[in-house]
Image 1: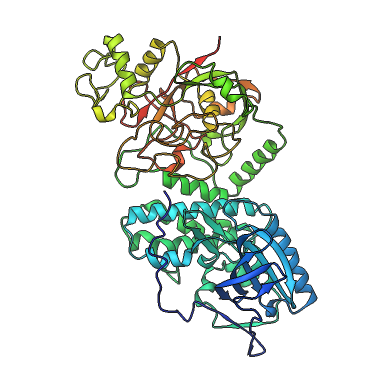
Image 2 (image 1 turned 90 degrees about the horizontal axis):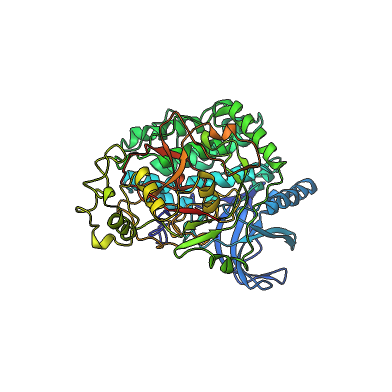
Length: 588
């Protein structure tokens, strides 16, 4: 869910620490531009957005592209030599190459009247600093933790990408922006490095800035990606507590006992004094944050306990992951699907209510997910058809009319437990749930329904291939970020009617969220380790776990478990409030 940014627009008394004035040799350096000026015959300054030791930021109109931009006029104090000027352009070029949803896009770099500037995308929203002031002290713990995780996960996603190219070196709430639709953007990548060696002093600088800097940076003993992760830890701690972790600071749960203990573990590892004791990478942090997101820590429906493996962390795990990523980069796997123009014709070949999924090759699994999702391997599937949406109560009712041995009172208790069709009264579903997915259905019941229709349950490989909708190695059927406008998750209100949210690239609905979906396979945590690249539609036909694979997450779960690659399992006789299914059919 997107974090609430309401209330952050209200005016508040000016805080003398909100601005920083730059001094050179004891004299203030004034910026030679003001609202209304035109820069380089292209940018018209419309409003001031902020001022700091780095310079002044304006909102401007780009006359060439006809869109609003943010323009940062760099402080002359930072660029007093040829070396620093050259470094400015070098860092700006690096930042301009960064292309990620969670990083501010750099548009242009220039100089006018001796003042260098950077133009970037304009984010209509608030800074994380404003969000913390408006929400951190007042939100209820469950809601606030969910919002904090939503924001921090996006920061981590941006850092994971950026650390392949550069470091941030000045991560703090002022450099993180939240758009009105919940998109998180990190600003000022690499620009902080301009301060190194600059002959200037700063007075009235934000007092808190020093607390975001990792100890090794303060000591001047070098830095790496783990230094940015220390800064992230300070930001996360402040979001949860509205305090800075100064001195012998209290852990978050000591300040708010409603927070789960795992929050303390994550914060403590991020804020470890020695870099070697921190997470090795942003990917490592994401893994632990997402595990926290996936847990039912507020006493709701317990998460499935199918998983017994845990992903490694630390330097050894990071080296192992890097090796896997390197191997994957050498592969030439391309998702092969029917062209967009051919899809309408292909769908006409599928039975009513089903969609033809064109055969193809894809990368199954996730390098940054749980241990049972690795290693990523190349899998091919033949064309097949799949239900466009999960089976509904109304559809399952027709099955019971034709197969009375599967009615509530008659069903074999060895093949379905006593919760079978728990929401139904005798053999009739509540009228208001007609178009909702049927739940409390065991794997055996789902398989019997599929066979009655002349279908089968999808294999795990088919399910993931279909869920991705033609997108390769993205977390969700639509991209890398959870989206409450595209799936039903993290809710306390039960299921919603099928087809409530937009379909994916294969025209399939509800492949993420709403209900878990049974697959044909047995669940085996180490199954991927046994597969070779290029295998065709692998099927796990036996497992000591005694569990059948479920996929897709459900209405009461966090976003992490509805990723395309997430795997888990239920006992095949289990009828669960979150469990549904859809059918597949092989082509003759």
